[in-house]
Amino acid sequence: QVGASCPCTRRGNRGGMRSLEPAFSAALRRLPGGCFAKMPRSQAMSAVPPQTSLTNMCTYFHPWPKHRSMFIIYGSRRASSTSPMEESASKVGDMEISNSFNLESIYGGGMNAAATNGAEGQTGGEKRKAAAPAKPLGLGGVRRRFERGQKLSMVTAYDFPSGRFARQAGVELVLVGDSLGNCRLGLSDTVGVTMEDMLRATQAVRRGVDATGNATSPKPLVIGDMPFGSYLTMEDALRNAAAFRVAGADVVKLEGGGHLAPVVKALTNAGIAVMSHIGLEPQRALLQGGFRLQGTSAASAMDIIADAKELNGAGAVLLVVEMVPEEVGTAVQASVSCPVIGIGAGGKVAGQVLVCDDMLGMHGRPPSFAKMFVDVGRASTEAYENYVKEVRSGQFPGDKYSRHMPAEELQKLQQLLPQVQLQDTVQESADSPVVNGHTASSSRSQSTSGSFGFELLQGRLLPVQRHSAGVRLAGLAGARGISQAAGTSTGTRTEPQRL
Image (cartoon, rainbow, N blue to C red):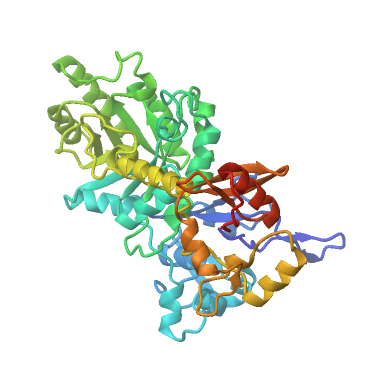
């Protein structure tokens, strides 16, 4: 988004013309289909700046050329044969627009700064290549893959890591689903998910999708799932859908049949792309008889097909069909012109969607229509159990995951804290210091046996190493007090073993 510098003027008190600072901020936005349009940056602004000239006002009612829009938004010249700064005028549709604004004021350093952004230390074409952003797939890319017969993949994501994993895998569609309630918030269903929950999750997923890492595939579309109660009225639908767009969603998803066609049409007219969800609707599962297969009779199947046609006619660019027989999924795809994404709807639709937690086995056995590709849940449980065991036994962190002070600094610290035994924490080396007849290495090797814990000794909570013989051996305390404590437990006076 860039502020539009409109050539606005007004007549002074004495009839002269004096310049007026731009009081209106415009933004270039990508619309469904891949085209660009110039529109107000905020809904609080008027549709066009009231003081602008007629020539500039016309730029709000014509599509902007893709190459020029890409340059202004991303700072890349790869799609433009001539520099906008070198042209005195440019064509937008059939209207000629004065190109008097200064791109250096936008980029804070001109085209050179935009070309070298993120490419320090490189020259020539390497700078432009390194500065070029990853190309979004967009609705146009999804449509082209669908028309070529390529199957589309969609997966849910709820946070930064899951969004990043989805991007690296090359999926086309990432759904920030209201299943966030079941999978992350511990809710029994999706009804309790709020707009605040969904917007925060959408922002995190967008950051994960934008974090390219090693990904070479185009950025997928991010779809925001509008939660229960967020589109009960037309005003609510428009306001909350706009909030999803601001949070980073490219498309919003609504659950419901043909009765939502007016809402879909209104959102589409407002420039917000819509994915519709039919078949089993989790937000209305109670009215549908629970989480069960839908469309099992010819009459109910025709109702689902009619809903799909009506929603597609209202402007829905994508459809989700959940838990229907494969034959019904096939009929729905044949009845509409947009891609149909199935979940438990057979393999004869345009694509598939799975909840990422079901795919990863995060919560045990997934639903019957979902495949568990890896048992992350079991692996995670084993990892937690191993961690607890190693902490309790003293095996972790050990020398491998511990860091030690330099010997000289450790000696200084020991002099400042004579009551604390620190000398045997020095890293193993050939010249390990000898303390009470034991080297640092031998002290550590002896301390690995037995169990580790804490005890209250002389009014202080101190770490204690319990050996198999029952002797408590402690460190980080005065040697005299520990010796007495150890001698009391065994009936004899024992030299303390330091940790």
